[in-house]
Length: 57
Image 1 (cartoon, helix red, strand yellow):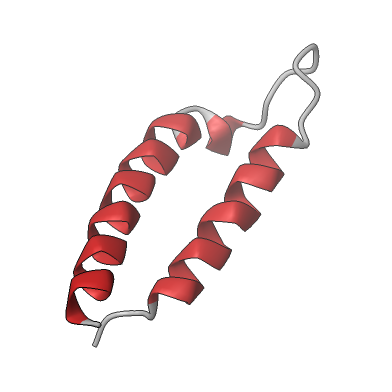
Image 2: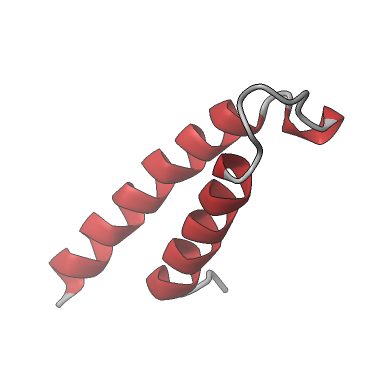
């Protein structure tokens, strides 16, 4: 069972806000090394699901 589109949007915006909260001049946590890439992949998948959801309506 897949998550509803609104849950995916909520997750994505929360993670982007977390990523943006780290000041650019400060060293980022080790777990953030590939976060930008993972968020972009997640965003692409999320947009595909949104299109499927809109087509189903």
